[in-house]
Length: 99
View 1 (spheres, one colour):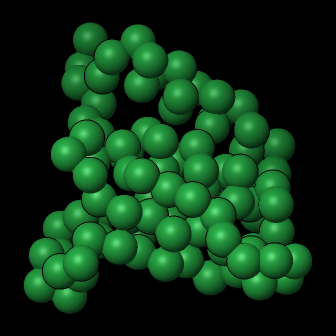
View 2 (view 1 turned 180 degrees about the vertical axis):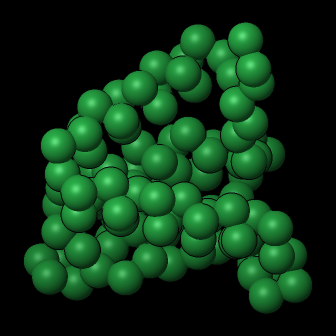
């Protein structure tokens, strides 16, 4: 893991450290992202559209998408605003290497 990737993970950990609901969101979406990356057959277009959510949760998932290397954007208005993620050459499952 590069210094930049480590800094992104550290920032995300700081953002969720005192909020159990946010921790659960990030961990469950991390699993969703991993499943999306592992399952080529059901996502042949390489796009994952998430459910609408509030601004802070979108912020957290933008950070998580950065860690995985997805191209990502929020679309929609108000209560319908949500993220769309797209695989790109930089997208990968990150691996924590022992030190």
